[in-house]
Length: 205
Image (cartoon, rainbow, N blue to C red):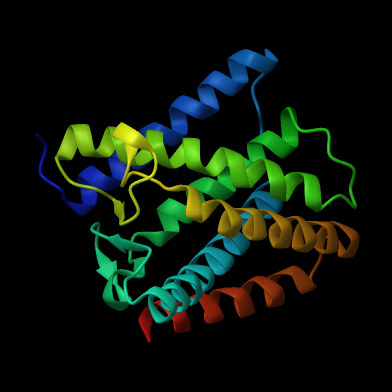
């Protein structure tokens, strides 16, 4: 087992991301060159909706059922609702979505429901892989789901989280559509700055 450190966690996440990037390049038979501003926007909105959504959903769940839906074990914050590693966890999901949108997805520009539905389903499989391999390598969960409804894969993910990911997919698709319509000109920096101020406020306070 490897020791859980910031460096090791970062190497793990970047390796996970690079493997998917390389595999997708091989699949489409070309080098995928990201548009930096667009990619950064994807990463930003996934971090924003991920962090704010996790705090909201986990607290609502705890209010309704007296237990949280999940607990972060990797650099936890807000009593385990989120992780200080969120930039790489949610940012990685944003990068994943960007790559898919740029290559294999054929969504119409104004579609939101279909991307949301696909993300709701995909997210469980992504969590099983991302959390599962981390558990094998480090002997610790990134996040631990309390419901046990996935058999031997229980606690790596759970079925209850699908609606949350559906909403993340729905709202990110809406924001992506709006930003693509507005463009990535001089106002982009202002928009991104406001988003990151909101992210920092949620994560730090």
